[in-house]
Amino acid sequence: MKQLQSTRIILVRHGRTKDNERRVFQGQKGGPLDDVGQRQAVLAAGRLGNKEIDAVYASDLIRASETARILATPHGLVAELDPRLREVDVGGWSGLGTDEIRVQFPEEYSAWNRGDDVRRGGGESYADVAIRMEQAIDERVKLTPRTTMLFVSHGGAIRAYVARVTGCPLPALGAVANTGISVLERSSKGARLVVYNDTARLGDVALKT
Image (cartoon, rainbow, N blue to C red; front, top):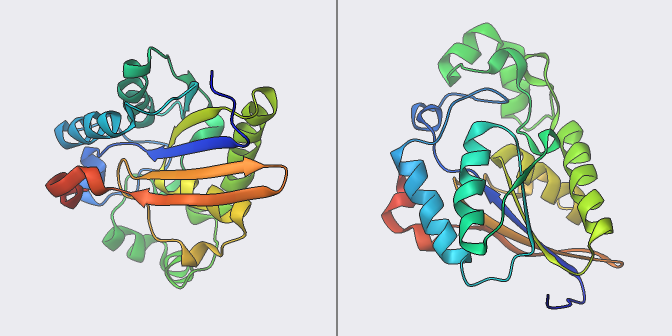
């Protein structure tokens, strides 16, 4: 195992699902990858295939665990599932599209749309998610520092975590695309964002997220 000066954290959002295609808020519900999502995961695996990865961790939601399996296989690894890597719990918004949310949750939608960190549908805030994501990741970093770890999670969760550990305001970070790759380096001096939401290898498939 190559000894690194810092811990390299690779964050990958899961591949596309039918709910993503339909623009439905999944939160901690939702189904498996669709055909496009499977293809996105295979392409991401190809991109990461020549990287030295020491361990793979993933949200236990099916869309993330499926993606993690595809990414881990070329490295001879099995992903360890952790519910702390789940997507933001959006409560009553789960399974709804934007038009439905505007009608059923008008005040929450307006607040969220202007950038307020609200607990949508009685669920979690981005701040809540960032804390549990940091706990899950820091636990692994402390156990095996100076290694390269791959974490497969969700768009909102990854965005919230990156904002928290880098100090970047959440609104300044764009949305993470399906199988978008982000890379952080963690050391005693803090966190450095190296890559955010890299989708270059997806080509036309990126347009289907």
